[in-house]
Image (cartoon, rainbow, N blue to C red; front, side, top):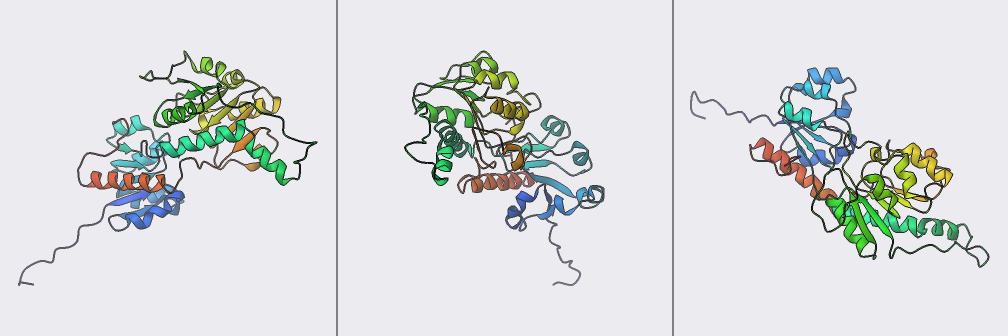
Amino acid sequence: MPHGAQEKLPAEKPHILLSHEMLLGLQPLLEGAYTVHRLWDHPDRMAFLSGPGQRVRAIVHVGETPLSRDMLAEMPQLGLIACVSVGYDGVDVAWCKAHNIAVTHSTGLNAADVADHAVGLVLAAWRGLVEGDRRLRAGRWSHGERMAPRHGLRGRKAGIVGLGHIGDAVARRLEAFDMHIAWWGARAKESDYPRADSLLALARDSDVLVVCARADADNRHAVSKAVIEAVGSQGLIVNVARGSLIDEDALIEALKAGTLGMAALDVFEHEPTPAERWADVPNTVLTPHSAGATVDSIPAMVGMTIENLRRYFHGEPLATPVGG
């Protein structure tokens, strides 16, 4: 090194924060470019915010998990919340926008997989596939004790709540079963499928109601006791969106009373949902929030998150901004 020359120090890697333990698998993919902090390593949040939190410039987040505005306000360098998930209902987007914090998500990347799962739930509940499996394994398959015949899907009416990427994919799949498709959403849009006048009207006219809408503060418990009972004692409600969209207590009450025929749920108001909550609830098919988690969709969503981080730190337009 020439006399008097100063050694050039490497630039400090940007500090980012993983918000939830389920994101642990991303850490090895991020450590090469970023200094990674894990929120669950810091039970003393005030100590974190006054220490490492002062340097955090981006949060990698699971969108349905609430992020406290008070916590975000204590991170002076924060400029991006990158949601690995499609949903971002745990993020106050309006507040973030007012405080110059961008929000991104993995829009549309797992829509096909979620729609496939939704159709699987429809078939499993409507045709009694899970009940049939239980009966066979319990030695209850005999000529004297058989499952009662069930209706087919052909000619039945399917109502789709929320006709976004997932809702549209579900509608197209159910149309292949020769079902009649209608939908309802808070915002009108161009579609080949008719839009009901209201969610209650859609429920009254549906044999199968599939909930696909994005959750927000305005549609909590939109599938209310009245909507649930409108689907009726022979009807089926499927939820692959968010648990908050359904009044879960009213749903359980209706299933026990027989005022709702069946329910097939992949999402719940509180997750993981307690097994004992469902132990004596009849006519249900339940899966553990797994509709969008496939070996195809997860890498695509992780890749999109990493690309949004790269773009943010290079001053480039974000790939999938919320509302963009």
